[in-house]
Length: 116
Image (cartoon, rainbow, N blue to C red; front, top):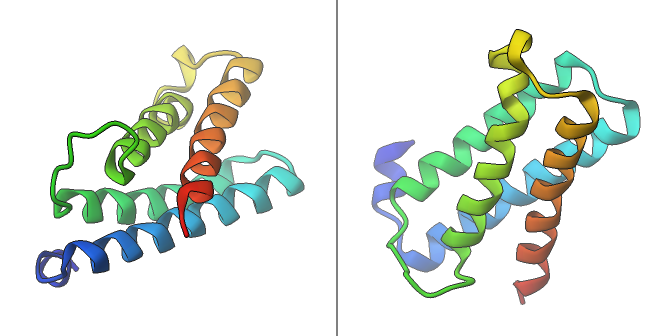
């Protein structure tokens, strides 16, 4: 996977990243509808890992609002949310976790609206 990503052009990477994030968004929506449960975290983490692999090979663009910057912001919000699985004893309240997830979703929405 990493080798294939390294050989892609910036446009191909952007398209691949778009597909990963879109899939992540759909997965989040589906699980929001069915209620939150530990089993739904795994598929989202798998999608997030695909986004991370893509970002490793994405050319750095310092300008604000760029695709990598938006996705990195989204990942920061997600990381806060997913600490729940890694550190259940020190996890924030359900309300805080939900707010973090909503923050991540808002960033994905912002990103998707910028696409042609």
